[in-house]
Figure 1 (cartoon, rainbow, N blue to C red):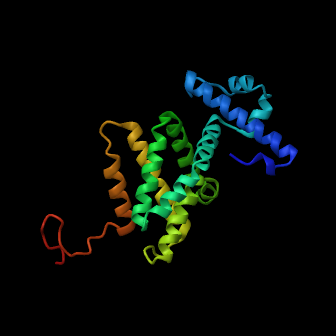
Figure 2 (cartoon, helix red, strand yellow):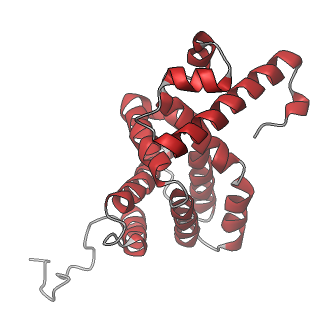
Figure 3 (cartoon, helix red, strand yellow):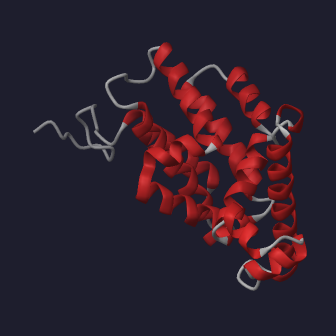
Length: 215
């Protein structure tokens, strides 16, 4: 949540209105479901004009996206602590992905809507999406630290790598939401991070099953 003390009166009023809309909307989503809740209901319950609501949030999904972004922002210190506590890129990514999964379990439906909305953003404008998302700033910090330590290549655009990592994170959450009983979160995280860091190429020259692939 932004510090209201540093905002001017107009900005404070705008921020309070946005916060009220988000709180009311999430309450309605929890009570009667996302699909069953209309923008008109949100405007009525939040006591704002429909035009005001649409000026702040053009669609319900935008409210969810802002809610998740604020949720993560309020917990950024936790993520920075995880980065400080872990010694290398692999362990930092493991820790951040695991924490992200813990948060997704709190409100599964919220993340289902959020992921769909975010993936549309990635497809439409990945660079814009990176500037807007809070979690991508954390992933970028991890990659920069990795580059400084010589663990991460510098010849690939940073934003491209961040998009790849964020796609892995969103795919992880989506996989769990689809089948929470069967989806192995830890296996997915470990293999996905290994794939990101080391690639698919078998550099040993031997088939993993025991054969020689060197020709």
